[in-house]
Length: 349
Ligand SMILES: NC(=O)c1ccc[n+]([C@@H]2O[C@H](COP(=O)([O-])OP(=O)(O)OC[C@H]3O[C@@H](n4cnc5c(N)ncnc54)[C@H](O)[C@@H]3O)[C@@H](O)[C@H]2O)c1
Image: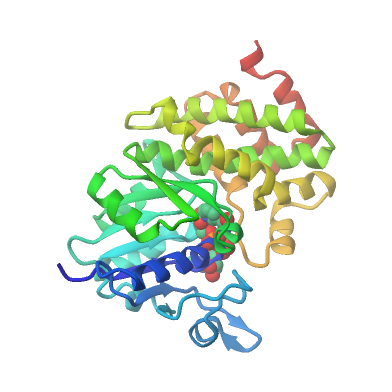
């Protein structure tokens, strides 16, 4: 079997952390081509192209400063060039850019190519919910697995121990991805319920925004725990209502479920920006630009997609936490009212 060539589509904070792992594993295995392409959305940093900096200094100085990337990871600015000859694609970009990028990639995809999405977010289609993996599957006509878990990028890059979950409808693909991505400090469980895994990854970012509101309003650990629990109940209910395939409660006990929810409600960027939102009168867009140095927030946008879906099905009242996050971020509802939505939650009625 010829060695499989890998292309990482994306090079932000998570994309660069995962490039460290993939570069290292590809170099040490004869199943994979040792040269790993990484598509980089080109930017100028102090008068130099980001791709040139990565290829000479082996560091993504903007999105993962302080970490060397393996030298066999090659930054490529043209997506059509980056995917050439690749039979494994790792998608790791903010979800709003995926459709356009897939359209550019399509003519260069060869038969038998497989993909894995690390992207957290959802879209809304004519039939309601649309997963990011669905968009990739439909546009590129390839099999797509997902990887989601309690994986804050900087900690993974620091090689601090964590777990993650691969959701793969095709078990053999799941095991190829496990071989490519597992390390002693990045332990992987493969499950078949891919759609549930993916929805966990998307929905927990909305809950994290709620957790950030509570921090900004000065509430304590008990309140945070309640937000996490009520958020989890809404995540499970939403997934059971809108997922096409089977949804088992045990999947929520994997790293992609409870573990990711906890880490995001304590450590992630959604929580951080939402805390600042509650403490200042600035908009989410202003804070994203001010606080994240080009990184993108997923929680508020995902709450907007979820709200549209709930409204269409007349189910807003059954998901007060999700709905309030949207209304506070985008409709001028007072952030102090977030607690009212928790006090009147259907879980207590
Ligand atoms: N960072 C984490 O800890 C983490 C962990 C797990 C999953 N994720 C998920 O991974 C995905 C990617 O996040 P990230 O942290 O790698 O990115 P990021 O938010 O750190 O960086 C934003 C990226 O978007 C790129 N970009 C900007 N404008 C663009 C455009 N017009 N078209 C295409 N790309 C553009 C930038 O070059 C940059 O690479 C997201 O879905 C995120 O939720 C992130």
